[in-house]
Figure 1 (tube, rainbow over the protein chains, first blue to last red):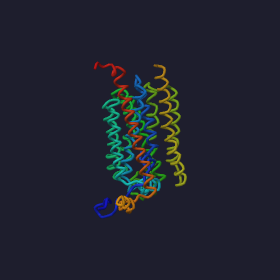
Figure 2 (figure 1 turned 90 degrees about the vertical axis):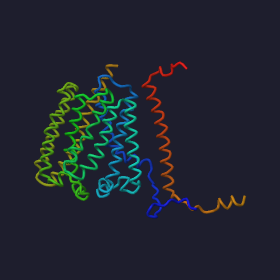
Figure 3 (figure 1 turned 180 degrees about the vertical axis):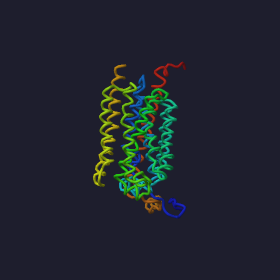
Figure 4 (figure 1 turned 60 degrees about the vertical axis):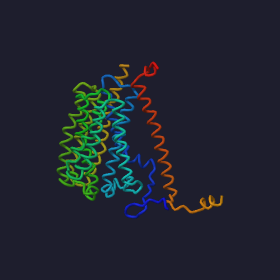
Length: 310
Length: 60
């Protein structure tokens, strides 16, 4: 008798060659780091800081939850990832990892992260994390992404939720300040991703993903990017105007807001394709710097404030 | 004794893993082991922090 197990179609099973590094790539570490950073800002908004270990576990759970969403996204999108240059080297399209393992990994980590956050902090935070994972995987990845050019406008809510989850983990409730941080990331997301979509328009065309530049054209996309940055710039000032950030933050937000609107305006006025691609590259790069800058100042300010309380 | 020897020398009819597959499996097993061990330590620490030191002061 043989101990070889055959698949239904009579073929031998594929034995994966994946190493832990491939599983770590499934978690989208760069996205994860931004999620941790924005969740930390939400957590530090709490009037009374949680125990350092509880804060660490909360951030770890949120990071793992975000990573699990990334793994489930890569499982579902393996077919279009294979067609796009930017994503073709991901573990599944590269053939290093089978989709079933990625699915199992994503589901296990999702459950583990939600329950760990619930046990360590509270069940509101856990429910919000579960909703974030659900929204990213089911609403964005499975439904919106391949259906409408508004995919990232609505889907951006998933990426914007971590500050609310972080604040809820520390306090057991949701407050206006954490919702303001949510709104900043939510409005920041479309111009950031549309700039990328302009740079990678051929990739998205090949994969059949209806991003705004492919569906509505470059002129409409440039106008939308400009309009979003015109909303984003004043919204970025809200933490200072509402009194939970200092004038230093206000200055950084004002300078950053002027610069991002300026880049969007240049992009809008670009005369030829090469000029516009350059401006789109600047918009993509600066948008990361803008969001990182705002949250960095906020995190430093809140950390200093909490240290003064101790 | 000779039967055992035959058993050892008989070529396996199972799936023969390549060197790369064996290396991947070993690395995955180690990662899972380390992950589970860290999880145990983490839950122990969470329990102590959440319940506080008084958890040890129970009458038997």
